[in-house]
Length: 102
Image (cartoon, rainbow, N blue to C red):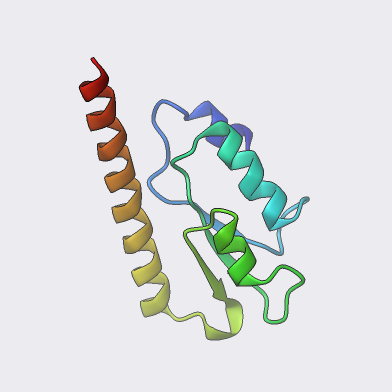
């Protein structure tokens, strides 16, 4: 979270999050990211049958959620490209909204 907050002016294009490697739940991590920057939408990699269902994580702000048992290189590549495209679109939209307000 601190690393993401430190890059608020130059955010990461994409964040990959292994839901099993956190000292907090993926939901807590997503909520903390929202407070730092509304643009960030990480891809969560979840264990099969994890306590945090993927659908709930997407509702809470994850860009995508992939179960480890179904993870492939092609699927991960697709998820990363989509996350980067969404990040760029949201950033562009916000820039245009700010310009219109001026």
